[in-house]
Image 1 (cartoon, rainbow, N blue to C red):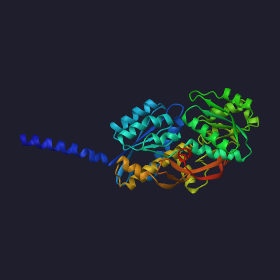
Image 2: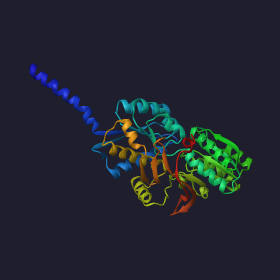
Image 3: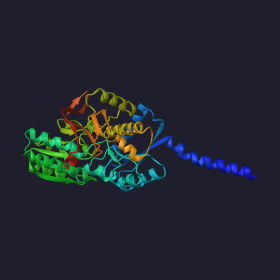
Length: 389
């Protein structure tokens, strides 16, 4: 009897000892996204893109099975932080990913640092984010990265005076500062800087101030998903017929929502790193597959941030032969380059930000829909904020 008890105890101990080894055969990715709330379109796009990547590439890499765990943070930073803690402590994830807005990415940064878990930012775009933790790597973009080329374009195309109108939170302030500094250096003048509350925005009174100022152009940044509301009020205030040109980062003319915005968007000039109309074989195949897998939904720049984020994780695991040590994975990601559906990209080894082409685009009708049609390319753009340090 005593021997049998010992045998049972030994067996239990062996099973317990085997658990971590078995767990290591699975690489868990905790995908934290705003699946509900005003930024739900961001979460929907990134989740769809991550799942498409797994569908196309399989769920095994370097002998490991990849498991995606999706959590809805509702776009609330406190919820993001709690979910990140749970995913690290309870679910034992090897990677945190997603992060639809800047406050959400920043809320999780201390957890990534303490747990030494890579945090792949697939959406949030304030320049400072990657400086919040040595474990953050970004596959989206930064607002200054998209904005500086637009300031150059404006100065080169007869625009002398501009009013800037941005959402009043970190990415908007990033965009405002980047545009004003670059446009000013080129001889242009920002005559007024307007900040619109992020929650329940009413653009009408700010658009009236734009109309009163009569600039050559208004430069706009609003987060993905807010473009339809802005454009509706832009037209209601008569600015579409005022002679004031509308220029913006590509968040305004989000590919997923562009057809819903309608013809009022025609002619809008934007700069961004991705368009569903990007003319490459990789992108045409991606758009076709994405729409087929998601009931016709068009991919946008958030989806591409998610798709490339998954590629980055998979390629890093290949380089580490499946090892999930956080520092090892981040080191494997630094300097990595590949041909994305958006064009050539790489991870800056110094800043862990993405280096990518920025395209100047115009909203046009194409193939029966509205698209951001690219007509100029600025190659291999780094985040200008960090590049200036």
